[in-house]
Amino acid sequence: METSGKLEAARLALLHAEQSVGLSSARSPFLSGISRNVADAVTEGSLARQAVESVPEQHAAAPWGDQSGTWEVPEELDFFFPRGLVKGTTFAIHGARFAAFLMAGVASKLGAWTACLGIPDMGWAGAAGLGIDVARTVCVSQTEGPAVLQALSAAIDGFDTVIVGRDIRLDARERRVMAKRALSRGTLLIAESWDARDRIMSRFLGVEGVHNGSGHISAVHFELERAGVRPCRVRMDLSGWKVDEESPAVSSLQGVAHLEVLPQRGDAGQRKRSAPTSRPALRVVTP
Image (cartoon, rainbow, N blue to C red; front, side, top):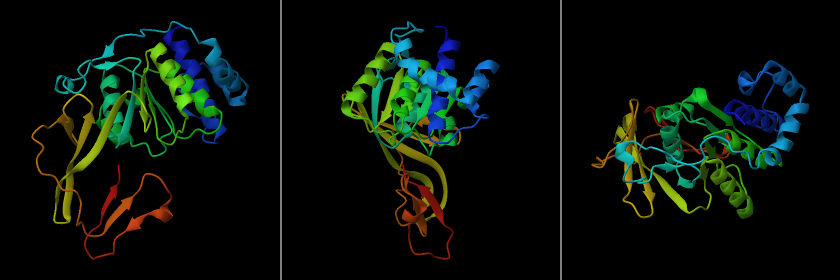
């Protein structure tokens, strides 16, 4: 199947996944790349169901595109990814989402299409700052029930890179099946909090621009750890990111007056606030 047909089938399945949790409508962005007749059928709902039901069987052995090779990483990341980002590999990301977006950004700059599933708090500005082309990115923020595996299968079949958020919970067998599917399709699968041979720990180190509880954040620092290679420290600011081996002193944000921490998970009633003061608040979202 040609790339256009492959993407169309994936869009249909992902659209159905959104409809199943009441998130999409006939104006969904998924319809932008689908032919008029197909879009009309999707609006009615029947073709979407057929697409989801048929994707796993219909395309089980389809020789789509280049299933081998690598996405070449920038020279400064060669030591951390000595083989590049090998297509078909499943990476397990633990800790901050920064690592997932950084890797997807590398592939996106080389032309990859990206699908993000189970990330209701998608940080689009951060993703774009790390190189992800939002014009070639599809995001299904929530999936539930049987639509989860169908949507994930469709994404793996239809996109070059797939990021699976921590809100999608699969058992060990289901994770193995998805990893094997990604290997057979040549899809770079980046999954938060999974168990996989290629495991990366992504840790928030601190920020620049804040001192003694005041100031403006000018840059953010993260550290990536992977077995067999030395840690990689990355600095990100408004101009982009770079590997920063010197790792200058950064603030951990401790002691900031009126710090409001917004957890990624949980509702607003669970937010923790320090005692209010007359000083300006610094609002931080925990990684």
